[in-house]
Image (cartoon, rainbow, N blue to C red; front, top):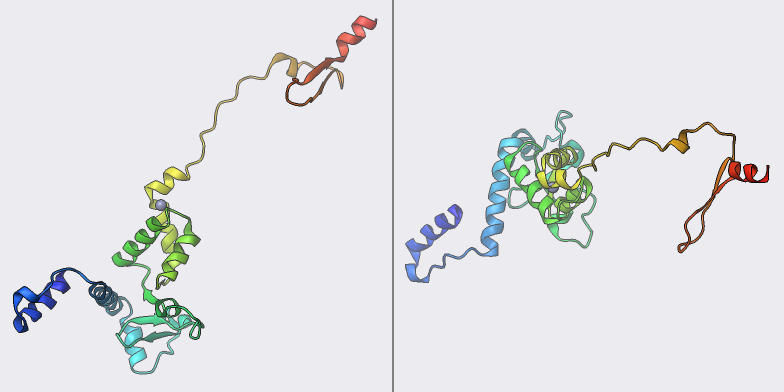
Length: 204
Ligand SMILES: [Zn+2]
């Protein structure tokens, strides 16, 4: 809304105030998203951006080296993967980079985790990447957030163990093998319990 306000202030200088619309458009939201991402990049990836602009992105110290980053026409730092010729939207082919430790990254993870109804780490990470974001060290960042998620902790809580009752006396009696035998019948009949020791008494 702040960015929209600034845009409107500029417009009001040129146009009549009655012609200016205050509603947020898709273009406004996308522009704001890029501005926020660029602000994070300046803070988190300052050295990498300077190295890319000077054409010296060869530092082995950078965590982004494996991702082969590039800066797009809007100035957003993106992953330059192997999906260049894939028939996918641009944000999926070249997802925008996000640092692991950032308030915006936490909000992004939280948003997509709730969007897919509190699924696990892999599903949340896939959804984030499918929507055009690549979090550096994303797996552990997502796992950390899920570990703190109250809804997930409730859903994934283990069942409480019950204290088992003492075993019945006939199961603990010391008897010869096959003294008690049982046969399982089908549904309408209960299991047939045959006491061999009583039979011997009858025969004897
Ligand atoms: Zn959750």
